[in-house]
Amino acid sequence: MTQHETWVALRAHWQELADLGGIGALLGWDQSTYLPRGGSAGRARQRALLSGVRHARATDAGYGRLLDAAGALDLGPVETRMLAVARREFERATRLPGEFVRASAQHAGESYAAWVEARPANDWARMVPLLERTLDLSVQRAAYFPEFADPMDFFVDASDEGMTAAQVDAVFAELRAALVPLVDAVAAAPAPRMDFLAREYPIATQLRLGEEVGALYGYDFARGRQDLTAHPFMTRLGARDVRITTRAQPNDPTDALYSTLHEVGHALYEQGVAEDLLDTPLGGGVSAGVHESQSRLWENLVGRSRAFWAGQFGRMRDAFPEQLADVTEEEMFRAVNVVRRSLIRTDADELTYNLHVITRYELERQLLGGSLTISDLADAWHAAYGANLGLRAPSHVDGVLQDVHWFSGGIGGVFQGYTLGNVLSAQFHAAAQAANPDLDGDIARGEFGRLHGWLREHVYAPGRTFTPNELVQRATGQGMTAAPYLTYLRGKYTDLYGLS
Image 1 (cartoon, rainbow, N blue to C red):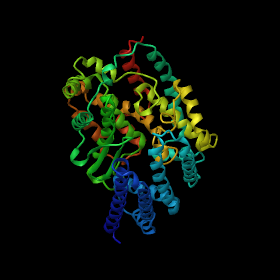
Image 2: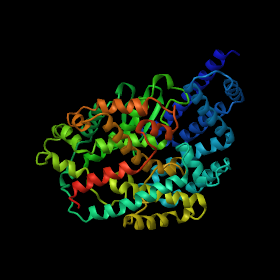
Image 3: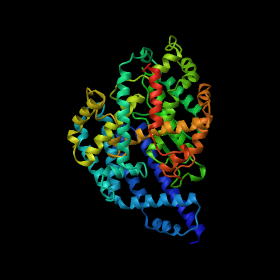
Image 4: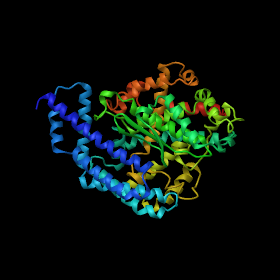
């Protein structure tokens, strides 16, 4: 086989893997949006079957020989990285037996279907044996990679290549030390006016408003769409099919708005990957932390900024003229930045959000390390929330059952990405501001093109061409640091709440 033929064969195989992944994403998207309740068992089997098929193709011996042959080719730097990522994924996939992959996928589908019913019913007992099975599968998955002495190191590296649990621990310790006293100070200050957010806001109008702002940000609805779900997410169904979901409450229009803007941030990343990288091992976001940085940047650093509301309050008031007739722009800005200790992670403000993540991460470490059992998890959850946020959930609905992650996948390696994303969001935003003076002026005029363009060039277009650490260094001029994030939080909330 010639060099050209080898590379063409590899690209064809990568296209097939991408297509199988897209079909799996379609099944998952449908399960979370439109699947009838009675179809859950069949969908779990379908997803398990497809996972087995994709795993077989991802570990095919012929594919391995193609990768070996490509190692002798004269490749450019992008193709070399492409091959390295493909080799890493092949070697990891071949460690996992096909039966294990199929069993994990089927269990995830069955567990998710049970959680959809168990959460509103506050039925923790129903989920205990399922979650015990999830934990067993998670520990077993990590055991296939004995070079990681700590199971959490395996899961952290899988989601954020090159990062260790010790690094995450250090970042979390720095954040906890800085944020706890700041939260205490803000909580003691007078709260802003909030009454108008509890008025009746038609959901259809909420959704339309979110889509309008998402389009202004740069989300291309010709290559995506928005639908309702219980737990919002973004998913790539194909190279040019990147969808988002949101949720809505009739008595809080900001829930739908910020859920939409969060997922739009993820989608902008996926839609911004360079065309020549699509359907290759480099054709997506580089890591969980970098991906989350974009959802948090567009949701919080942009969407909760004073400049954003200077530009968009009129649009919102036009959408809800009666509900907001007695509300000022400043009151809206303060209301969407209220700091309150709360039970729900996805509803949490910028200051307390990371305490929710730290709680879950530490519980995961205990579960994976064997010092905590699933049967004791609910009590451990209450104790951790008492220690970290001074709260106790009145039921499991707002406690251990609230997040979908443990009930639809595995335990370990997911939650820390949310806080790493917060840290990186401020670092990328500061770099974009340094390169583009007066971005706040743009945003106040409803113009997001310069910010989107800088992010597309420096973060989105490279896809996985660089490692996460390399991408951060190239885009910002330094390695990951919490300093810009803490500077942003201290400055914003000291001003908002009149702290000394």
